[in-house]
Length: 270
Image (cartoon, rainbow, N blue to C red):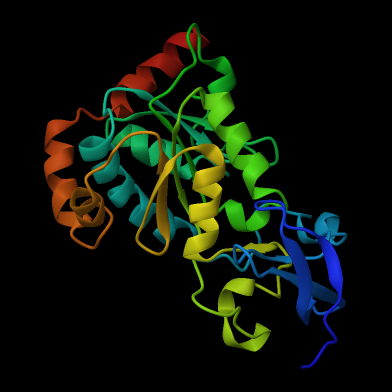
């Protein structure tokens, strides 16, 4: 597919000029331009005029891997929080969807809370961030499978850090390497749903970190932006497949909040 490149709006991360890279059909009916920043590598769709249609439900029916992904994320996140951050601190799961990850982390003994203005809290009811009493600063904020959905990644990250009153963000998004893949060559474009609009390279995230004055750690899909120095070997180990082995140790060291949370909810109803 060949499209004559044209100048477009500035990149929302580095403010560099962007040009049309290719065009693809979203939701089987919208022909959408993808804009590429040659300075930092950010690839985005044009302004998402189809979002009301794409988000008629916050979680699409075709996302059959939602639960298995959250289980996989929870194992790595538990290891990462335990060994690289403060395991006793309060954490905010930003844009937390149905609350699956918040519940899984609380079951593992971590003090996680949910926030998402666009989705119903199903599994972590009673543990919403807005209901936290007193000081609402946190040890960190998580944002899994979110950045690919937002038109202003830099603004989103700033908002997440500010709301959680932290300088630590743990998040996920799948990175591409080199030149942007053609639409038919990369499943992560999610053309059938129309919900993925922002795509990143490693240098895109480095630019994002520099804009925020933070350090970046990444393994290609799991990423950390932080003001702290994290041992890179420890990060790689905790975010790798070995996290399952580490997770068993973490579960022995942490006390699950499952039963305590049950009592909290019951006492609220009395």
